[in-house]
Length: 85
Image 1 (cartoon, rainbow, N blue to C red):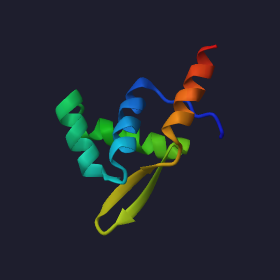
Image 2: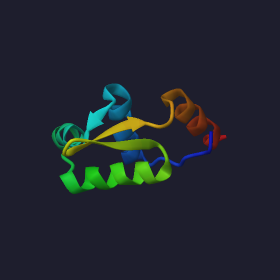
Image 3: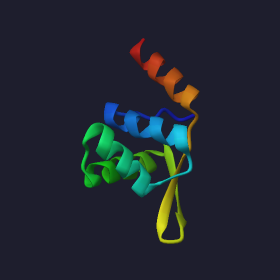
């Protein structure tokens, strides 16, 4: 697996996707708006960054987009631990 650098905010998004995938943009926005008080644009930017980094995949489903993890949670956690060493 190619190393992916994930920020603390991106980790919040990744945990939500791992828990509920596939998940619609609106659902990610709603959950993080309520729990973290993030604005919609902030969450959408983080989703776009994670897709660009290769951590998430995005597919069109009618008028909405669904996100799924492109990397396994255990692999990301292992990589994060190794980066501390």
